[in-house]
Length: 252
Image 1 (cartoon, one colour):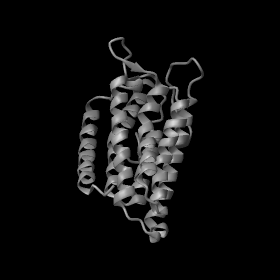
Image 2 (tube, one colour):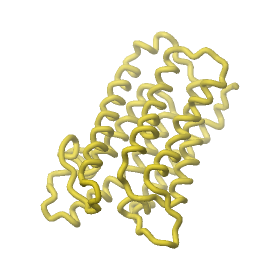
Image 3 (spheres, one colour):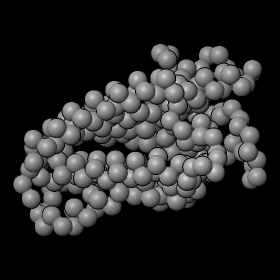
Image 4 (cartoon, helix red, strand yellow):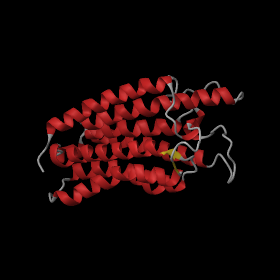
């Protein structure tokens, strides 16, 4: 398959514009899943575990199938970057989804996420497999090394924060509690902060417009959700630490 550069560029523009638009929309109202979803019989709901599994799976499966079907021998640079991308979604699909104790999600939210993960997984892997050219010199380039460090830090924060959130409640408990420990000592949305750092690290490592556009979209989509979580804690917990920020320490 040859590189469809114009389609990749168009997708990146749509992704950034869509992220900015989605961010403004979330400034007015929360996306109705998790704590912001009012359970009712009028909606179709998907339990948390299968919801997260099926909506995240395409971002792992599509790149794997494209690697298998490309027939070309991948260089180490492309292989390493694909491993970063797929490594994140392997954890989200086969670890996070099976351990989550979250609330059911509306079917339309799950389907929207599944479609996005399918398209984004295709474009990111198509660019790495058929458009990018990472030679041997890239393996010692400061951008790859810095990106790997930032990505690893972000993933560590994300996984550790998810662990803290999973263990906030004992089996059978439904109430919300204040998360403590790790980056939660500084921000209300430590799990979101970790994922944002991850994808900006990936953008530095890949040094590409598709990776950067995805990082910007991630910031625009889950950054406002972290802010809503911050306001939720301040509203319902009188003892919530006033020094914490929403998603970025010492900023907001």
